[in-house]
Image (cartoon, rainbow over the protein chains, first blue to last red):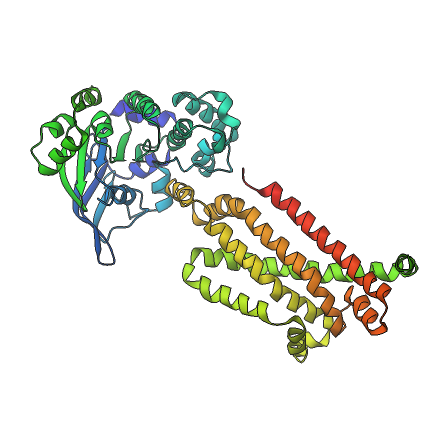
Length: 280
Length: 210
C-alpha cells in the first residue's frame, strides 16, 4: 500500500490525502466503515442497523432490488444523506466531523446517465473538481488529456458537449470526471445500467482493467447479479434496508442463503463464468 | 398620410415621449428582475414558500392598472412624483412572469445533474452560479421578455396620472377625437414592444443550453 500512497502523492494535493492524513491508516484499517447505521424517513425505515467494512483497494458491490437501501447506503458515505443513528467512518474518522465539501472532493462519484453538466464541454466536465480545487490551467488541461486516454476516449471529443456523445461515451466521461482529482474512493451508482448489453460489457471489462492499475477503493451499486459477480471483490446483498449477506462472488453462487439463492435462480444459468472473470 | 405629416411635425415630442416611455419600462423591468429573480431562486429551493409568493404575485396581477395607480396616489413619498408611482406599479406587474419563470427554470434543472455536482463537492453557491443559473438562464429571460412586453403596453396608462410616456398622445388623441394623435402614441409603443421582444428574445436564444 505504501507504493500506492507514493503514487497518490505524485499527483499532488488530492483532498482525500489531506483528509486521510489526519489519522493513522494502514492496510488493515477499513477505508469505509458503517457502524450500526440506521436511516429513517418519517416512519419508513430505509436502513436498519447496517454494519459494513470496505477494505482498501477492493470493489464492494451493493446488490439489491429497487428500494432495498443500496443507493442510500452509497449516499451516506459522501454525506448526500445523513444517518438517523450510527456512524460512518471514512479513513478511520467519522465522516460528519470536518468539512463536507472537503470530504466529497476526495471521493469520486459516478451516477447513472453520468449526470454530466449539459452546458459544459467534455473537457470542462472532466476538469470540474480540479477547477474547484483551483489547480492551474495547464495542469487541468494536462490532466484532462491524460484522463481521456485512461478511459479510452479520443482527444477530439474534448470540445464536444454531452448531448453529442453516445451513452457509452458519456459514461466514460463520467468515470473520467470522478477520477480527475485522483480520489482514493470511488462511489458508483448503477453507472452502466442504462447502456446496451454490448457497451455495458465493454465498459465493465475496461473498468476492471482500470482498477487493476489504479487500486481505488470502490463501492458499486447495482441490481444486476451478473455485473456484481463480474466486478465485485465482495458482494453485499441488501433487502428491505438490511444487509442480508456479504460474500465473495464464488461463495455467492454456492450460498444457501434464501435471498442469495433466489437471486441466482432468477438470473438462470451461465453465471459461473461471470464470477471467474470477476475473481481473476 | 396626414398621420405621417403629424409625426414629422411633432418629431421632437414623439422622440421625447418615446424616451420617457423607454425609461419607465426599462427601470421597472430592471427593478422587477432585481426583486423577482432572487425571489424565484429562493422559492425554487424552499418549495414551501412557493405557493404564498406566487399567489401574492398573481393577486397583484389581477388589480386593474388604473385602480392600482389610483390606490398608490395618496402614498406620501410615492404620490409626490407620478413617475415614481408609475415605476412602482409597473415593477409590481412585471414581478409575476419573472418570479414564475425563474422558479420554473431552476426547478426544471435535471436533479441528477444537481446531485452529481453536490456529490463532487460543489458548494451551494457554486451549484447556483455554475449550474442552476446557466441552465435556467433562457427560461428566466423568457420571463423577462414577457414582463418587458407587458410593461410597454401598461406604461401607456401611466400617462393618466401624468407620468409621461407615449400614453400622453393616446389620451390626448382620445380627448381631441383625433386618430392621428392616438396613432402617434400607439404605433411607437407597438414598435417598442416588438423591439423589446426581439432583443430579449435574441439574448434568450444565445443563452439557451445546448
